[in-house]
Image 1 (cartoon, rainbow, N blue to C red):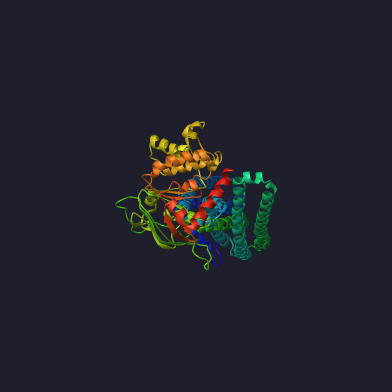
Image 2 (tube, rainbow, N blue to C red; image 1 turned 90 degrees about the vertical axis):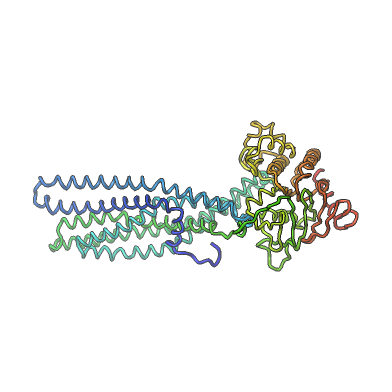
Length: 592
């Protein structure tokens, strides 16, 4: 929970689930009604026993015993039937609620900007997606219904007890007051530790995921024991928190078991005295304690039902931290259309800094002005940290400019639907990310309706013909993040994906860095055919990549300080010569 945020009450917090549960509520209400009928039936049985004891048994009339026996059998059967009906009503709708919440969270995660994912650990998101929503579902189908029904059962049972003997009923009521006090204290103690436990479980999931994804690095450097030590420390912290939860639960259970036993003892003493004084019949005494026995389970269940409720409440809070996270990159209220698509991309005095950048630091991009004409290939060069990758990320609104604007064919990219913008501009990143899907699905991610000919052309341009040698060709399933492929193979598939999208503007953030010299030359030759008719913005980390461009823009201290042909800038700009020589040195080191 963010610092300083006021904690909502449990009821207010759980009511936020209602939009997802709205369609399922009729069945949940019916399940609750069935459970309540079962509880009331259980409370009626002692009244039958009262009539049996004070009637046929006291009178010695054995011929009248059969009807109470049949009544108890019928009531017991009805109670069992209502319990079955309750389960039948609630199981399916509760899983439907879980499914809707999970789909909504996944949709939200897809919609939130990259800046959100920069701040959030993947393990925290996974724990909310899986374990937290599962907790909410189990509470809805079990905890909520039994908490409501058992609370009502206690109230109805107290009415029955008072109707049998107001003195004993009052004793029972007074003795139960400590339970409500301890339950209140339990909420204050348990809610905080339950939230801490869920957060620590998310951190532990992040540690596991990072270790699995980085297993090659850990093994290569022999740092498995280091990772284990960090994991063990986090696991021990979680263990301590779980022990604190267990102590809190054990404490409430102690009182939930002790108080009813003490209440029974006091009530029994008072009941026997009243019966001996003739103020209470034997049948009333039997009915009172039979009713009190029925109430014992609802009373004792309050402890674990409260703990389940507070766990679900923390899970709900964690879920809505994501659902209610601010989204600064959204579709415009009144989107515009590009009427004459040409592919002209222009940066107008663009400023940018990351949201968590210190207020006293300069903008990473500090007034970038650059025009890329339709069909032109513009390379951007600069020293490391000059903001080249950030500049490319602004084109598709992975981040939004903090000042100035970017236009595509005269329309501000913020005035376009994000889906429309990202169909017109495709990106290929240096860090090629692939998904656990087939080669075909990965390459056609941006344009799933492409033909086989278009797919083959994109693979040919990216020199990714190796896919046809895979066990199932283009239908071969790629492992998680494509780690079964080499770095160069992953980059070529990522480049093919960008080409297959057939965009108006192609943005390439050094997509050839992992390729060998011969393959790079083939890819560059094929790319020239594509770039001849496509506007392109290329971040260059190699001199050979600069050669693809019609013009080159030099990015220096957050500004474009020079634009021109490669040969012109070499002849006239000292900083450009320094940058190109740096790229030459890096290139030689990579090829060595």
